[in-house]
Image (cartoon, rainbow, N blue to C red):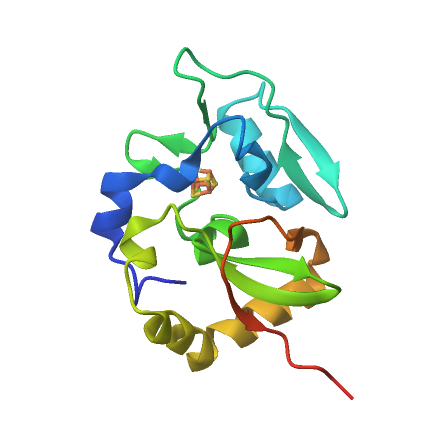
Length: 161
Ligand code: SF4
């Protein structure tokens, strides 16, 4: 989804958004049932818990460096390819509820995107990406997270009515 914006090469080198520590484990993506099944077909012991109609990973164990790696990450990248969860397709953009309103925010730990001018980051949203994100969230409200401090808000949803 962000292929026009973020080069696959940059993402392949980084993979930061597929590895979590105990402070950002809440950021693991929300999976559909079908994606859970695909991961379980490759890694049968992967523990999922249901969340508001979607599924999230049960993050209980961290490696010796204190990190948890998404079970869908392989040597060659995400095993789900272009079908990866919506959260992953729009990252480092995220949708959160801020004071009772949905808003699109940005994660600061994606250096590639966070180093860009704010006008550019908002411009991508205005170019149709925001509509795609809000309309996906209409059908899948489970992807909307409560606001988390430190995520700059780029765009609020327009008030209806
Ligand atoms: S589903 Fe794929 S892209 Fe998303 S966190 Fe896991 S490995 Fe990364």
